[in-house]
Image (cartoon, rainbow, N blue to C red):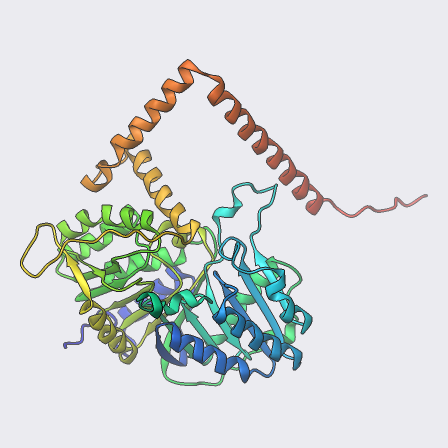
Length: 478
């Protein structure tokens, strides 16, 4: 395999320095060298590594995950954390309120709390922010003693292990372990979010070592709502790739600018491939993802659907030199709405591992084509249900984007986008008809919503005024 020069090796040329600067500014993440990175494939490997690493913790354990379930996997992890907390290790856990809704509870966490651990929930419902639930903490992060860390797409749930009794294979997922100076970036990312949910971590728990652990250059991309650092970086990588760009994503609902970037790369001769689930745990998002295939296929992007139970990995590898692994999906919820964490690796050896694994995954996948050809199968539909409402919200927001573009005549709609407009138009016409015949059907809900919005804004204004009010002072008496 030839080695392209999209990301040239040292000694650094002026072009490489410009590329590094562009990457740093786009992602909001500096390049950190002297790290060791290990690729982890599928949940069983993750759970074993986590359990072993937690058992050896001596000072601190920071866990942040979107889904933590009260099942055999969750209880083993909780008990391991509780054992370390009882031994004097500082254990801090951030759970997403919506992701864990109905999956854990006070009773589940009580052994850890009794041992001295602390658990905080991200973004529970608040009256002052009625739409705040859209923003979720979708990160999957574990940091041990500020020396070893794990970044992944794997959640704390036995669902990732499949069910041999029912013939359900394990989910396909990817993560990494990281040692070296870049771990400090992960500690700061966790500490920043922790401080948003309550008192900050003490300074002594933020101390990290700058000792080299290897020779791998990485960027820690820790995004928060509306920062869009990874979105800018993904577009930049699509623009800079010269030979290949291979993507895997669990809930692909590409925004038009990113779809156009992939199409432009493919038309320019770049080998662009997209691997997505064939049977998704969120059928609605899978249908939206399939609706976006046509503009990609017409541009020359190759699309594959995984044949197993669920393909949950979120990865990218470009030009045998650059790779990304983490929690972010290629949709608006991850790019704009959630707290996410990803590791971008600039190393030929790691990229080679990623490419090798990608080709293995393609051998277990079905390629989607515009017309039936020998050796190609049609995409299958999925009847599985459940999953993350934030990813479902991504599909709704994509539809809203298409509707806005049509109403505002902002751009030419693709064929896949246009197919959804008649149904939306019929729904709007039906709603208009109901409003004409029975105005109260619209008036009452609208009054309630506007009233709640007004009360919410008033509450936010009072909170802001209280925070900004100067302390009272006693006037000097002459």
